[in-house]
Each structure stands twice: as C-alpha cells, then as structure tokens.
Image 1 (cartoon, one colour):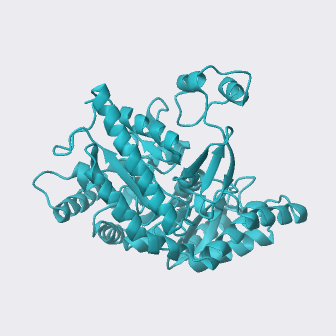
Image 2 (image 1 turned 120 degrees about the vertical axis):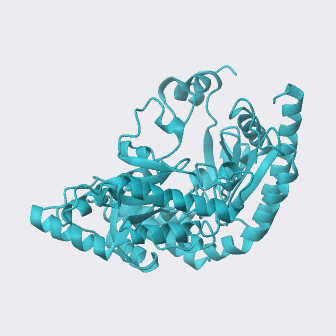
Image 3 (image 1 turned 90 degrees about the vertical axis):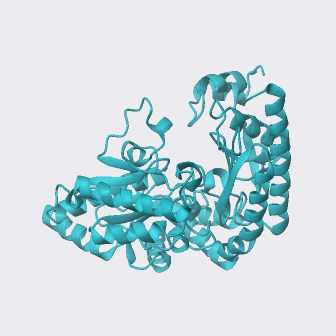
Length: 459
C-alpha cells in the first residue's frame, strides 16, 4: 500500500499510535474510522464493520446515541467547564457521585474522579498510600496483582499491570508490586490438577506471599473480576471469595478494577457481584460514559474516607486532583448514559443474551486451531493453538492472531487480537440477531485462518 497525501499519510507522518508497530503503520497506514451507527462503524471508504469490541471494551449504548450528544451540548451551553478543586462543585458531578454511591457494591459510598482507567488506578495507589500514612502505617505500601492483568499504562498503574510487553523498555514496574499466578486454569493448571486444586494452589500462593512479605507491609490486592486485555481470563469458582477471605484476615484492602467489567458487561451491575466478592475500592471508567467522554472514578468505603478526611484536615488539604477530573460535560454524559442503561435494561439484555453468546463461542473450540474458548456475560475469547491436545502455542507468538485480525477486517468484524487470543466484547445494545451474526463471522474467520495457517505451513 502506497500512502498518498491523504489522512492516512498525515497520520503516518505525525501520529505515534498506542499499542502499534510504528514502522508497520508507516508502511500500511491506519484503518480510519469515519462514523458510527448502533453496533456498527464505517471506515473512510464506506466499508461497514460490526464493532465487536465496543471500541475498547467500552461503548455500551452504541455509536450514535443522540441523547448523549444532547446531554453534552446542553451542558456545554450551561457550564462548559469547571473544576472541583478548593471546595468548588457543580451539579453533574454531585449527581453522578450520588448515583455511583447508590449503585456501587455494598459499603462503597465516596467518589474521587479522574479521566481514564489508568489515571483511576494510579489514583488508587496514591489514595491507599495516603490512607495508610494517615493511620500511622508508613510501611504498609506493597501491592499484590496478577501476571497478565491489565490495570493501565501510567507509571503507577502500568506497574500494577502484569503484562511483560507493557513493561519492556519503559523501566517498569517502579512500584513495590508482587505479581501472583494468573488464575487461568487452561494455561497455568498442571496436568494432574483439578480446577479446584488449582484454585487451592493459587490461594496458598497468596497466603505464602503474605507470610513471606509480612502483612504489615502489604497495602492492597488489586484485580479485575474477569481479566480483559490479558485475554478474557475467567477465574475458577471459589477463587475470588477465597482471595477476599485472605485479604480480610490480614487487613489488606481489596481493589476491584471494574474498568471493563462495570455497568453490565458481565450481566450484573459490576463484576465483583458476578464473581462473588465485595471490594473496599473499585475503579470504573469506559462504560460509565460509553466512552463518549473521558471519565473515570474511584469509589471507596467510608472507613477509607474517614481516615483520608481526618488527614486532609490535619495537613490542611487533600493535595491530589486533575484539571478535568469530574468535568461537568463528562459527568452530565455519564448520568445520561447510566439512565439509558437502566431504562433499556441493557444489563438484563446482556444477561439474557449471554448463554447463546457463550455457547456459540464455545462451539468454536471445534476449530483445529482453537485451543480454548472462554468468557462470561458479554465478554468472550478464543485462544489459538498449534496443537489442541498439548496446548502448544504457535512458534511465533501473535503471528496467527494478526492473520485472523486482518481476515476479520475483510469480513467486516472488528475484534481484538491479544497475541493469539481473539477477544470480543460487543456493545450492550446487541440483539439476538446481532449475536448470531457475530458468531457466524467468527466461524468464517477461524475457517479462513486455519486454511491460511495450513497453506503457509505455520507451526
């Protein structure tokens, strides 16, 4: 592909893209999306795609919801910007804080805003450290996370992330963080282990880590109820209740990263509810505004708030915040987005369609190149494998995933190739017919990919 003096050429000349091979982009140019409608987006040639990833796990209400545009416009006319520093406030952020406290898991009643999930989890680190300093526990600063977890990409949240490539050449992690075994039985379980034994081993690893490090040094355990960017990893039954019990026993805060799971993605309001645990802190973003506006929130317990509030009084301020955090337009859009999710019962829609979606995805495991199909709610993935029997991956990680991704684009489906895992996370407005079409396209994509792998002799 030769790039002309076009949008593609301009992009290649000036824009460094996240999670992209810059040299490949210079050669091939980007896929430029021009407009959206419902669960579909259209590129600049007019080609139509099902957006099977809801953007980046995030557009619950579809790509042209006029009510969100109207909410943003009305707020822009009334108060286009104001901050929340120095005891200032505005109605949209106040109303949204009340709403989040109403719908959050039990006991979470206070809100601190940021602009992205990464910023939100970065803020969690600072909040937890501030909290422990306020309680006179300056040594209680370490975080426990998991290998293959994704918690963001700032210096702090990127340190919590447990994906090797996200650390490579960025000199991460910089935090005192310990990454535990990823709760993925397919990859991490041993041949002689049952799933229950695998769960027991992971919980024993957690206990052993706390004993080795000292509970008095460990501030928090952070985890996505169901891992997203790590490849849609659903932990085994009993894992999360076990983690919660251990954290309670050792006075370690439990942080639920709900940036992807929250607001109905798993067929429940939040992932923690679906996985059977109650956090002390949760981070939300993405579907809070359907990503029409940048916004995130850290929602936390009254016990944490009281210690933080006392310390702010002692020092004279809580010296943290972002210029655009709790932005009036973003919070107004979030309020309207949450109204739409409730009015149209999109959480119920996800719960009703999940059985067919998950059954259809699991049926794709019959493909000769699929090692595992997995998911929960309206999140699912298939992991590609060179040998189904031995679970052997392809020799060049990510190669086959990129072949499948290119074929998916040709077929009119946008998915996410995470190495050799193909992930799906469609908008919550999908219908039964939409799900059937996504599954049909996935079958075609896998058939074509298998043929291409065989033709090239990829092993």
